[in-house]
Length: 193
Image (cartoon, rainbow, N blue to C red; front, side):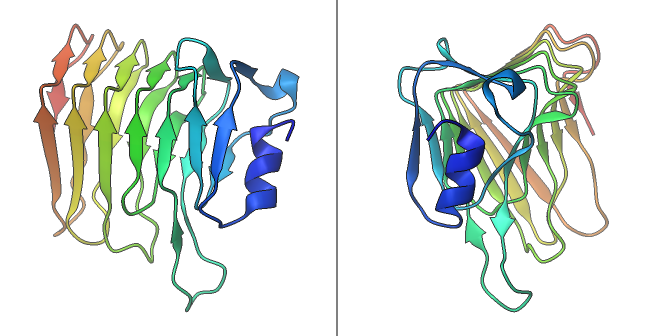
C-alpha cells in the first residue's frame, strides 16, 4: 500500500503486520492524520532513525464495531520516529499495547493515555522509547479500572515542561513502573502528580 492510512483502513480490525519501508510518512506523502490502528502491528523494520511519521498522532485504539461486541486491541508500534504532532504523538486507549524502539520528539505531548468509556483498564508497555523535546513527555491518566504503564530502558528528557505527568481520576489507580529508565533535563518537574 502507498500509505499507512490506506493499509490500516483496508486491514480494519485484523492482527496483520504493517511493515514500513524507510522514509518520511506525512501529509505530503498522502497520510491522513490521525492514523488509527485497530488490531495491527506497525513496524519500521529498518528502525526509528530512518522511518519517520511527521506531523500527526498515531492512535492506538480499542476498536469496537458494536456497543455490545468485544473490542479489538492494537498490538504493537515499533521502530519509528514520531515527530511534530500538534497534539499527542501517540494516544493510547487500548488494553495492552507495546511501543518499542521508538523516538518521540517535537510534539505537544509525547505519549498520552486516555481510557475509552467502555475500556476497563490498560497496560501500556514502553521499551527503549526516547521521548524528547516535547512540551510534556508523558501525560498519563488511569482507565476505568486500575491501569499500568511500564517503561523499560526508556528516556524522557529535554522536554520543555513536565517529563511525566500523572493525572488522578477519582477512585481508579494508575501504576507507573520505571525499570532502568531515565527522566532528566526537563524544563519542569521530572514527575508531576
